[in-house]
Amino acid sequence: MNYIKEWWRALVSVFFVQSCAVCNAETESGVFCPACRRSELLLEAMPGLLSLDGAVMGYKYSGALKEMLHKLKFEGESKFLQPLAEEAAFLAQAYSESSFDMVVSVPTDAARRRQRGFDIPESIFAQALAVKGTWQPQVLVRIKTTAPQYGLAPDKRRSNVRGCFAVQGDVRGAKILLVDDILTTGATLEEAAKTLKNVGAKSVYALTLCGSLENFGE
Image (cartoon, rainbow, N blue to C red; front, side, top):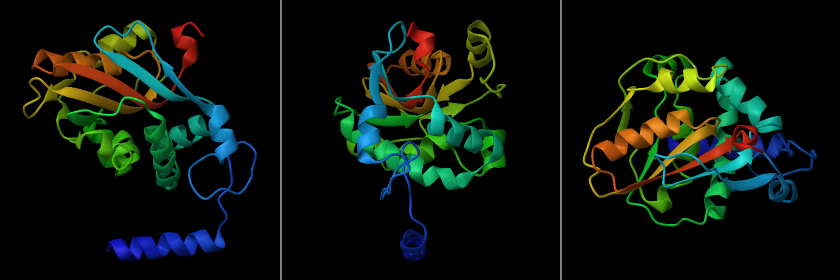
């Protein structure tokens, strides 16, 4: 089946030109052309996330990325998975922290995953960060249904995700890279990191495709 997917992608690329979401220039992959990617890439370290040993957002959560992620999350527009995954691959190349024991994605609520038919963080980062460590997306699981974080106040975000994760497998002594699509207040990542450390993870770092600078004093 893989060869059929590759054949289809090649066919689409012949007849449909991919363009940069900022300047509209022709581009071979991702959301941005190389010039706009350089200007859009932040790689900003986020302070004040106490359960994390480091947290970095790739791009600002605005413009084309925000629109694509909204359509993915709330309208199930799976056509945006591929360009976002390609953009995550560029981000992975730029991310300086190079070695982890495990790469773990923040899991989507089971009901929303069934409804969409895919898990957004897992789909975006699976190929991009496999070289950074052993890709183990099933290590972290959701054990409690939560309301969408979008639109909630910071204190409500924290209470919404409290106790919603569990760990399956042995993470004792592991250096873990935790990945997600969006970093806003950091409540979900903090809860995930705390859960991993409570069962013995040595350190937990976070990398997100994009994030909201305004929540961190920008």
